[in-house]
Amino acid sequence: MRLCNAVLRTLPADVAVPAYERSAVSPGIVHLGVGAFHRAHQAAFVEDCLAAGETGWGIVGVSLRSPETRDALAPQDHLYTLALRESEAERLRVIGAISDLLVAPESPGRVLAALTDPRIRLVTLTITEKGYAADLGRGRLRLDHPDIVHDLAHPGAPRSALGFLAEALERRRAAGTAPFTILSCDNLPKNGRTLRRILTEFAQARGGDLAAHIEAEVDCPSSMVDRIVPATTDADRAAIAERLGADDAWPVLGEPFGQWVIEEQFRAGRPRLERFGVEFVADVEPFEHMKLRLLNGAHSALAAIGRLAGRETVADAMAEPTIRAFVEDYWRCAAPTLAIGAEAAFAYTRRLVERFCNTALRHRTAQIASDASQKLPQRILAPLRECLEAGRPCGPLIFAVAAWIRSCGGADDTGRPLPLADPTFEAWTGRPDQRAASPAAVVEAFLTLHQVFGEELPRRADFTGPLQEALADIAGHGVLEALRRRSA
Ligand code: CS2
Image (cartoon, rainbow, N blue to C red; front, side, top):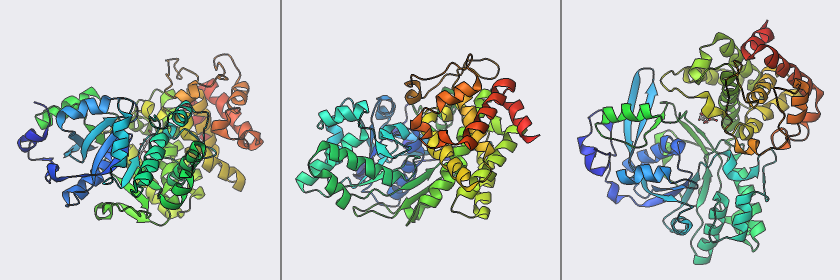
């Protein structure tokens, strides 16, 4: 039996199901990039609003690349299970907030029709760092990006999120429909402002006066989103089917913790998410820095170190005392770069230890390591730069960069292959052969990667010297021994 509207009544009593009439919901949100994170985070908050009677905020999900999500969920009335796990406990909730799923490459016209529907007042995005087609170090649009080149040549059949947003805004304006608000839910610095800047640059490149319309009329609040969402495995599918008594082709997993902090800029209206724990603030940056630099920064460090040391999950890596001590040290260095006080940072990291040690999640270090070249600048290099400028210690941050470089060499410390999943990095033709080149030569080659390191950092001897030393230590002794030597 497959999960669908008709079986909702037959599910076990301890599985939460949509507490509202799904057929009465109308679409109010288009979400671009409808992956597991969206389904485990924003959609769950929207589900609360629907259940509370705000029926005008159903979600039309759009996949910008593959049909997998639609293929899995369409046969089950777009229902799916959210499993929140901690230790032995698992709470299951069937989410009904998604009312339709579109696949952009198959039918760009249907996506544009959804985006120009006057009932849509909010467009949310989780398209990952690389979906922005931007040089994130500088926060500028990459006009040479193949999707951007395509969308400028074919504005009526776009491929990129920016192409869809610009064309939809143009059509809405022509039809006299007010613009939607665009809410980025990606882990980018100043995500709303960055999106607004690159969308405006894209609109300028299209010509006409759309850019001026966006500047004057379109709200792009920044937001900070947080929930750890490991990729679903076949074992998860089987275990969830067992509990449901029905098959769900693609349930999503997460930790019970969830946070969403959003800037209050919604001229087009919004669901009353504040009733369900979402925080609306004037300036999201302090929250964003706290999360990007403490949670995501440590995650990326753990991913690189954990993979080199053969630790499959974040919890496995945290169980290794040397790594755990390193992470604590990392936080001590990153925390002073935050606007929040030391006490708040300490409270946050205490909670992070518990979240990272949640063995029920099985959050794979390989998952976090994907697209690392797109993540390092905002997570690790931004606070690192600030520490260097202030003359504060930042050894653990530099060590994390060295571990990342080493993890790009193709093998872990025992010689097992370490595949990369970072297309932007893989496209780089200057990659040195780490089995042959000296650590100094490897560092020198990596520092030419300006998209990651920027222009100024590679010129600082107080960065390049310690980076070479850390890489030489890792290459010579393995990552765990290198960590032990650091703390000796
Ligand atoms: C992780 C994030 O995969 C990654 O890069 O660091 O997905 C992280 O789990 C989330 O941002 C937590 O909110």
